[in-house]
Amino acid sequence: MSERIRKLHVGSVLATSPEGFISVVNGGSMINNSDTRFDGLEKVIQDAVAMGAHLDPILPPAPGNMTSSMEIAQSEVFAPIILVMKYDTIDEAVDIANGTRYGLGTSVFGPDQQTCKGVALALNVVWSPSMILVYTILDLPFGGIKASGCGRSSGREGLQALTYTKTVIVDRFPLIAETFQRWWTIQYAVSFRAGTAI
Image 1 (cartoon, rainbow, N blue to C red):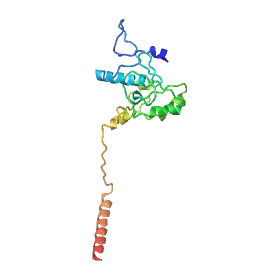
Image 2 (cartoon, rainbow, N blue to C red):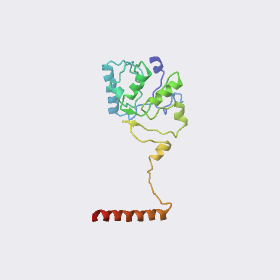
Image 3 (cartoon, rainbow, N blue to C red):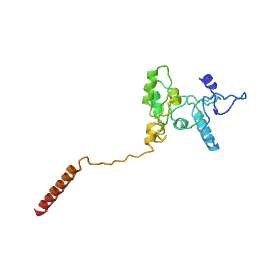
Image 4 (cartoon, rainbow, N blue to C red):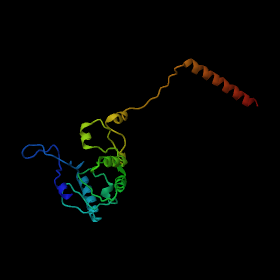
């Protein structure tokens, strides 16, 4: 796996090569690249290594021998990091993925499309795209659940989030409704008088 990860290119898609070509990028840079974010990211990586994670000096970092109890496995780091965790069964892998308080998105890869689809449906996330769909169907709803946020952008759901529902009821048969209302008022008044008279 380390060899495959070494071949990935991390950086900005806007950066050009020395020849002037736009470079191919497999993973973007860290979101909100401030000193505090970088220090926090460095801390969770060092904590994972201290708890037994194995880290090859490659980019993007791909800590192996991870456990779900490590802070980095329970964080939304928004950085080009690949966490590698072992599992014995697909159900265990789903439990590991669902065992966080976050639920923004995931990607599922495997040799059998039906199995991948089953895993994607079992995950507690909103966004589990095929990379082809991400770039071709731009009106799909996007958003998170749990601590990843609420609400949606894009698609019908995103539009509905910008609206509010209002109910106005208009009688189609006002004469019948008015007659029933008068009858009900009279019946109630007679019952009330009869009750007080006793």
